[in-house]
Amino acid sequence: MTPEQIWYLKQVDLFRGMSDKEIKRIGAKMTEKKCVKKEIIYTPFDETNSVFILKQGEVTLYHSYRGKKLIMDTLKPGSIFGNIHFEPQKHTHFAEVTENAHICILEVDDFMNILHSRPDLMIRLLRDMSERLRKYERKLKGGLYDAKEKIVHQLELRECKGGLLKKIFRKECKITHEKLAQLTGLSRETVTRALNALKKEGLISTKDGSIALAEK
Image 1 (cartoon, rainbow, N blue to C red):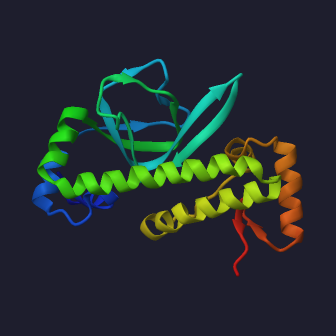
Image 2 (image 1 turned 45 degrees about the vertical axis):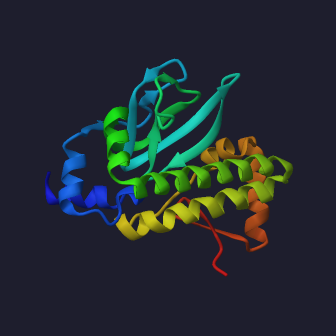
């Protein structure tokens, strides 16, 4: 493995604090793949025995209902996804590349061997999965809120992820009207009206096509 490859794997929360030797051992089990925007990594009709680690770019997990995308999560570098049930089964959702991406792929058996050798990694993974469940629960509860509250909630989640992204890659975490509509389940027209209202209230700011919460 190159020093750059080792560095990227060390940015994955699950592998933080591991030695270069341990990282190289994990890397030896991985394959890497570059994906282009709009490429589908897997669908609910696919059965896969792989765990994916997002090295660069962005991947969106979503359900499709009557031709409409219902976004579960938007993953940033360092995220782990795929068959984390550790049993051969079909997925319940789509995984689509929404920014050109570079992913690492591990077979489930290899991933399980890594976790068995380092029980502390299993604890980290369980904490991560628990946090994801809490986030999905908050998103479901978000269905009770009005349009402006839904948008502010999504921007808050986005900035939590974007802070790390900007720190590592010095890259702004941008979001479009269309993406906000998909994340909130609102129409694009409703999103535009709500954003205009939030801007007038001084709660958000827009610059160079990006939307962000106003600094307090």
